[in-house]
Image 1 (cartoon, helix red, strand yellow):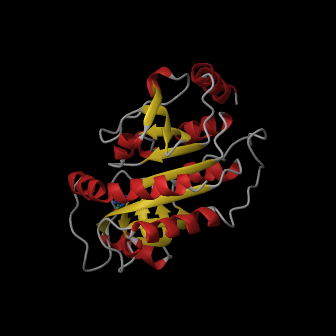
Image 2 (cartoon, protein in one colour):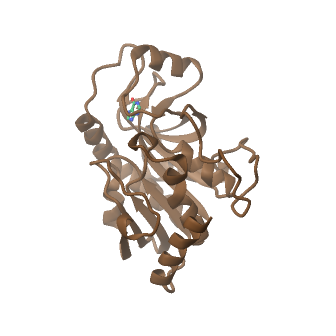
Length: 272
Ligand code: HPA
């Protein structure tokens, strides 16, 4: 808790009268939302006490205090992954700090492999549930009672009102055919999966697979923070569609989907 409060106090002092309403985490190749922001403050992660520093090349490491559609948001430009060697506590530290700073809802994006055979490149999958296949989770250890309960309920990890609003927004923006609802499986990575692993993930009920998001969502649910999470389907992993993927391909598809993701997030935030 002390680490969290130190980081929050540092930011609060510098934010002065900027009171954030929402938090946004931008995933791999999904940084273009930043173009839509009116940025008030940029905090490089390295300058914030106790913040981990991002090591993935496709992620920049800044916390932005900004306005989006007239609403005050904190935006994580770059996130932390377990495969980088961080502890789960480090991975979720920024989400906890954003909550201490007052955010009321959390919006998360990621790049993911599509397991559902109906999915196409650059589809947006709204997470309605997840399967945690990371080796651990951020709630292991002594419970931080100030943040939430020891045994948080996970019946509804993704806020149903936000899900509905996202679907409505996709309809009015004219790309409802590119938006799905599904189950996200989170694996540690950093390697992609074998064909047998993709078949296994499909068999156990996943529609998409990636290496992030679930730790942050668990931390958010623990704190009672409603979450909307969106996967951009950057590669297709169902039998018959599977082929070799390079990170450059993933980034190219993410860039193609980005205008829709950005428009959707903006529209949902406008409705809050
Ligand atoms: N597996 C895991 N993570 C991913 C994938 C995938 O196929 N695609 C994008 N992120």
